[in-house]
Length: 80
Image (cartoon, rainbow, N blue to C red):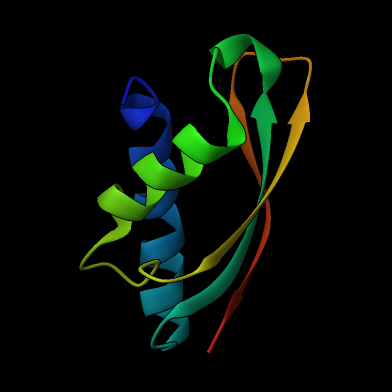
């Protein structure tokens, strides 16, 4: 779970924005994930799922695109 330090701020930021907008939950999140992080799709999704429990992001569909970088970028997210 070495991705934790990259995923926690994403969840926190999306959750805060969701609360400000008065939405109940996030249904889909699109992220760009840096190839140089040293993770794979399954590991990243599993870690995200664990860290999202109890937040507005819990259960959200996660769409990942990998690109040559060492960070994570939020592309967009859908709320309900």
